Length: 296
Image (tube, rainbow, N blue to C red; front, top):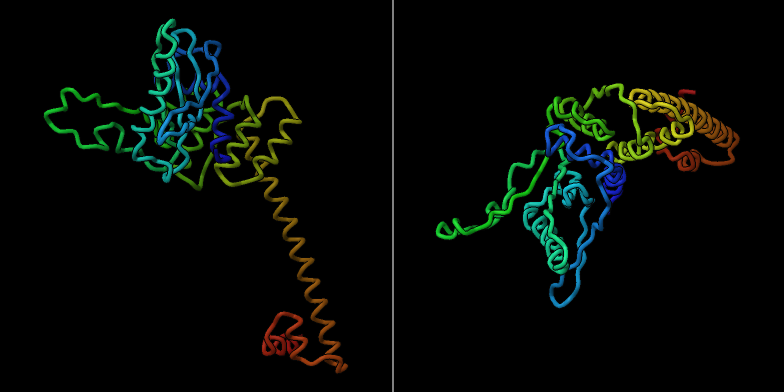
């Protein structure tokens, strides 16, 4: 599991976030699932193929105790992870859970719901059903169970949907939606972050900017209410500080280079070394060395 997968899982593993995602995406913002009604369950299942046991893993899975329903998430990172055969994967995972129930004949079976969160910048527009990835003869269609998958394109949620989120997932959804519309100008809402460390680690892997993780450590120590606006202010401040330090270091390095060049000039002047040797030491060709020597 990659760093991005792990970061997404760390955030959604909180019951308040998990319940919020389900309520907004499945129930249009109605508070149907409560965080207190969720219970962790194993994400891995096993199957036998080619005479060997194999293991398959969902990103995240919980039991909704109130109605005894297994709800699972797949988090898709980017376009390369849009799996054309996802209906087969989902039916495989769901089937493994149903099979485990079959072995427990003394307990009542429960439904399995799998939700795919597509975080890529491309809409998932094809291969949402088994019939999309196989040819079903017309004569058999009345008897064919066309297994479908539940896909939600996070980057293309409506502003109304994003506003429905009550948990920190709203910050993630807002980031994806706004940066998909306008990658250069991201202005977050002033919403208090509950799971600061997990949100900023996720932002770090989403943006490739390590400053988010640096800021997370500072803010966790600070405590109190923290908003994404404050996070961005600190990230920008850290960027300016790093820029100034890089500028100072570049200035020091330039000074060192000038000092070395002047020393080489003195060695050439007193005949200690040749111009060819001085140019080689300075990492320059002889013509460039002579030109700079004449300019000084």
